[in-house]
Length: 378
Image (cartoon, rainbow, N blue to C red):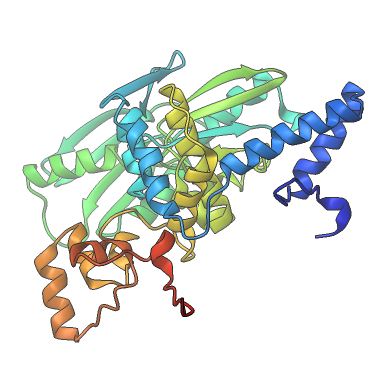
């Protein structure tokens, strides 16, 4: 680091370049004299020193305590109804648990969608909502009847454009493999290719057919339109971030989903890490809890350093520990000990928990090193 990017304190504390630049900017803006500037630097150095950790400090345990202790004050079951559509959003401790467990599908998947400047109006917004909301076959059906004599299902469609009906029939044929689908004008019949269908079979097929999604984008159950400043924003119940990038009108660079795994698949592991930090911070903030960002960042780093989003649990971070006793001390003790004995694993006792178990000095703080002293003769 160059001389310009540092200010030496009495105890040789060096401030980062970013903080130094901010100090210079504030001093110029407020027109501080040399004494005022010196007081500001001294106060910032003191705060910086208090915020630093010492070599050998067990920052993992401190981060875990700093997040979990405030989390005990969180409500056990909290739901929020977003907008007039009544989208029920999971908040509080249940949301925090599913973030740390890295659930593939959150209890409430949501997307926030922004539109490009050209389409940023209420009319286009409504059209896009109609386009992205999942529709099932039952949304287009006028009547369904069972033809017992010919052992088939007869479906009558509502009035719609010819190409729209053809698209629905095409999608159905891709999804339904073991049945013949025959369409005539606004009517469609479904019958088995080989066996004769019973009444029970026809009832089962009827339910299955009506619940089949036929829209281009699936998994988006509902959507509401809100105004955020100059932007018309779409908030959805359900998430399909991969398909979202195919829609021309959507500003994909500003859009967001709370499904961490979808973000990782589309934008990469760094985006997933940032989303983890954002989701944890927002969940804590909604409950009025203030946790230092660096504790949250450390947890997000641990969950994503392998290149995938790993849960904090026996199938993720805790299960990947090298120490046998540390793994056994978390969950499923007998299983870990038996596996370790079969594989002839060795515990080198370089972690905290395994040393605590056998009453040894833990390798943190002053326990990280040994001192050898040679005293002179008196």
